[in-house]
Length: 153
Image (cartoon, rainbow, N blue to C red):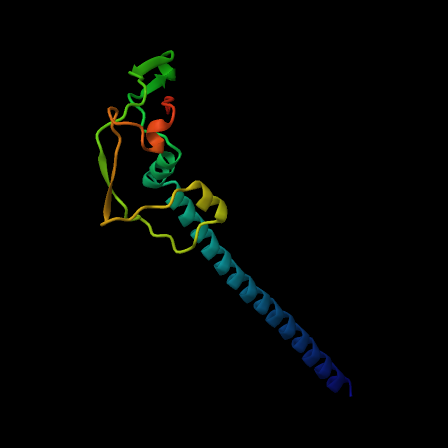
């Protein structure tokens, strides 16, 4: 009778141990799936950040705000006592620049409503458009009517 009781207790112990291990396995599987989903979301957000911080995207948003490229750039050499390298100058208009209207990284998702309000709608003509930056022409674009404050870097 004692041997049967010991065998039954041993089998119940093994059953409890197996159940606990399977429960941990299910929890691990759930956490791995959650990690995969969050990793995909993080990569998508990083891709959006990369698109927004690309030089063309920054230039497009700056042009939409009426900014023009700066003239001469100057740098401070702090290690040599603050010596100025280069010759600073005000932003100057230049001849027209031909730019492609094709996005370098097409976005899969629609931008948020706040991003749509701040960014101008792209104009697509026959594949390319001409941006007029001419100092002698009358101010017809928002870029020409904006104050020409220096864009220091």
